[in-house]
Length: 155
Length: 129
Image 1 (cartoon, rainbow over the protein chains, first blue to last red):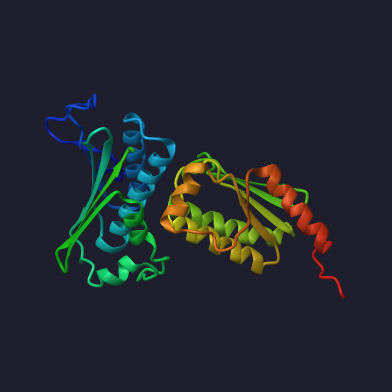
Image 2 (cartoon, chains in turn yellow, green):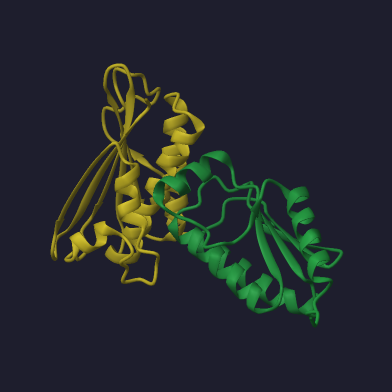
């Protein structure tokens, strides 16, 4: 299947595969189709497990990745999920960045209020993600794309 | 290929067990199989065991509540068992709920629930009062 290669995360130059605290690993996962959602969230969970996040936190992280990557498949013909670690004191954080070059979100305020959807969904995805994020940032430009960055700290 | 969900008949119930991570299409397939098998097996209840699922996002939750609604319209009850603690936490935090679909801790509890329900209504045929 042609999807296989894009499902494998490519690591950026200079990455340390051991993933020590000093040199964080950045994983980039290309999201083109629904099965990539599962791949991306599995990487998120592995990263959270490796850095000692609780089971609950790891599930939250996997769920955030699932919502963000699904949005990219549904609305933007795909995009990229990047995962990296942030090192605060005393906790560590997983930074999830979802980047696409889709149509942008013209009605962002309504979307963020929740209960609004153009795809027949619950319309709870993005506002739910903001609710569970410790840090949330969204940049969207009509016709250019959307970048959402979510940080989840271990404490 | 290994089946992603198994469906067994136990007395007049269907027990569906998710064996591995499901992608969206698998949820739709499962929904369609259960909605049709409820009729073929003339069962009065469906228990869906999701303990193998490590993520239930908004899509999954919507599909599960649709599934339960369809099964109810076919004359059977459906309940979901085995939602993992982390999944329950995430769902609550995300503001996702199963729209009144009953849940139970595990298969045992789920079957006990269906038993108590069918005792109360004494079978499929509504009683006259």
